[in-house]
Length: 203
Length: 249
Image (cartoon, rainbow over all chains, first blue to last red; front, side, top):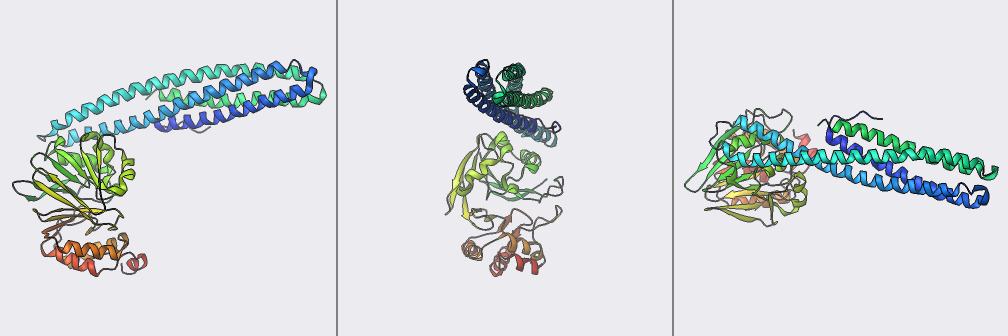
């Protein structure tokens, strides 16, 4: 895990990248669900208990992909807002220097209007930035709690796999491992993103 | 940043801004020019992002910000126009005049409010109040889409990188001894200018103009006879060869 960045707009871009990885893993989870269904069909009656679980794996993959995409979009919007915020902050910082350097100029008040406009824009961007962080934070929490089901799903899958007979047991245990592994990797990315989001709240 | 008045009559004034002794050490010193007419002003090659505060501070001492209704960028380089994103916040109603070929490139500097007026390859004119300013083609000198600004009334040619010299911030504003000045600009012209053909075509056209002052974007201003001396020297100079420029250093 890399160190958290000091620049908030870089942190936001890093979150977007992490969540993009999470989406890819979720897509692999969807493949696992298809494989599980194929194995369960081949195993026939011996894997009767496993078949309903494949629907749950499928549902978990679907929810994860959907949620990851939504979070990704939120992170991308946040990234754009933070870049706009940097630009607005920079313009205001430059105006401040001008107000000091040219304080005695008879025309200094001609900057008042654009300065005020920049301050208003900065305030709007600040508000939007904080709202987007809150939404991102909520979505991450929701996905994180969905993924808790993956551990239960993996445990149940293992139990059912043990009933399927030696021919299919390994393949089904492998499915359970994949579900658990994918969920654990996604959770890792989410946890990292949550940590970064909490640092963003300080700006 | 210093401000120097170059010309003044009833209709307009030319000012030069430059020799900024507070600029960061590793960036090239630049000259900025402004034409102020009755109600409007054209700011030429407003400079890089690092110079924005110093530039706006200098400008605001001379005129109200909203009087700057036009900007000109001779070409797309960062020392010319990377401050655009900040001018865009300071002058939301202004128009930027710049070569058509750079429109989609220059907009990368950030342009949400200012509008872009594309100068065609053959050049064009801009009338601000009673003043007419001509955008003279200077392509490949050095940028492939590049213009100078000529003021017939003031007899001033803002020549962009043509006539530029790499100097320190305490250099004099005007060329005093032309022969001595050659060393300061020779390598710049040989290395930065790619085409002898373009250079000779420019010299031929500019010789027909009545010029009292030639004002480059870096270095010193050429005045009176030094303008002709520069044109003669530049015409004879071979440009566009790295090896030759290095050998003659």
